Figure (cartoon, helix red, strand yellow):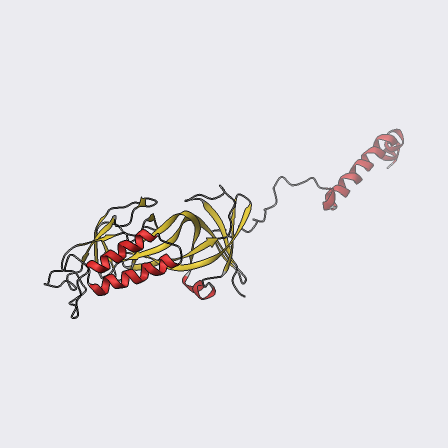
Length: 283
């Protein structure tokens, strides 16, 4: 013991420093807040991905990505079940009244053995004339187009006992008015149903927006529903003009809402342009 006490007296400073270092070490080991930072990076929490803006539906609105087309003026439909043999026009093409659009052939079950007269029946010509007269009164078609329809009505043979309306051979459908081809859905060797829209004739001057809708959204959107179309940071007001089904392989694959735009700035819009569309639906 004397030897230890003598050693401590002789080396009291060294012993004190050793005791102090030991105390600091113990404090660091016992207290976790004095430990060095761990090299393991804490796991990060992923931020929820934003819902894509091309298909969003809320209580008070439907937000979609759409595109700009020539405003639809007149839909051209198939008059019977059959098949498209040839298509003579392209999307966006400017055509004249009377220009061939496509050739159709009725399905075998609908064909008749009787030949079809080269001129339309009086009933058919009268129906076409009445339809074009309404378009003329609305300022959509020219006087000349109405007069051409009137000539066809005068040349059509009267038929008090009309036969079958299904042609026995291929029929070429001609454009009833001049315009720009839009929403072209006809393709060669494509089966079609009676009343199926194959294309539309646009004005070539005014533009409209087209946006797809889900089937469950159709009850929320009607003609006249207000719409806001945004392009390049500019909002353009509009309203739904109509909703048309898009048919492919004899099945409806989508519903397209056509939107008339109100006073869009000159030069802002062009056909094919992608736009953000918000349809202001009721809650």
